[in-house]
Image (cartoon, rainbow, N blue to C red; front, side, top):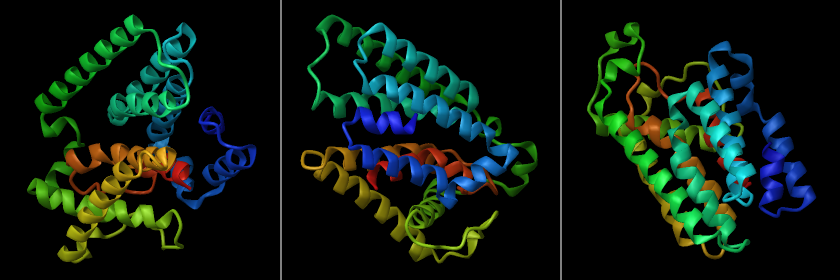
Amino acid sequence: LFGWLLSLFGLSRVAVIGGMAILTMHRLTVEPVAYASARTDLKAGLGILLAVCGAARDWWRPGPILLMAGGALIAWLSKETAVVLLFLLPLTWWVQARRRPAPPTAIGYALLAVWLTGLTVAMVALRDRSATQYVNIGELLGGFVAWPEWLAIQSAAAIRLIGAVILPLPLTVDYDYDLIPTAFRWLSVAALATIGFVAIWQHQRRPLIAYGAIWTLVALLPRLIVQTPRGYLNEHQFYVPFLGCVIVL
């Protein structure tokens, strides 16, 4: 599926095979495969790839629409973080609009209305759900922290894993992010913001690199907002953001 997505973006056969090889053999994908608890991340990744492949084709036609709907259903039934599809699908449409003619106006407006409705419902649901519905009861013993503190420490976790995509950083089951200095945590927030700024700045000259970078940030967004006490971002939760990193590579 990932190779198909890369080919739909018009990449060469060498680039497609290279992307598939990185996804298959990179050490960051070991934990999602080896952990039974990570099956939800793998299934969500499967659904997201299906939906995005549909969006990368002639998405206003019946076949791709069914592919997007089926993939979204698989992803949503697997994990709540599938809400990122509400951002990834229009992002994919935008990238492909640079290479393909615009869809018929009536169908385009209809799909846009469906997308906006889904986005609104998702945002309302996320706002209304209590924190206890996102975590196990045992995790509540750890308590909650102020959101800026959570953002900072999760950003540090995200930067560590983004760095591990290229650098041979040590991997561990439970990295102790509480030992990371506060200054480095806020530097990590600035680093994520810089990635987003550069992606937007370069979206005209390097649209696919910008697409992969924004994919990574969008996939990380739920982890930066929703608190899961004593459950900082780890390797298997980085599976969907990792797909965006490989697109950049």
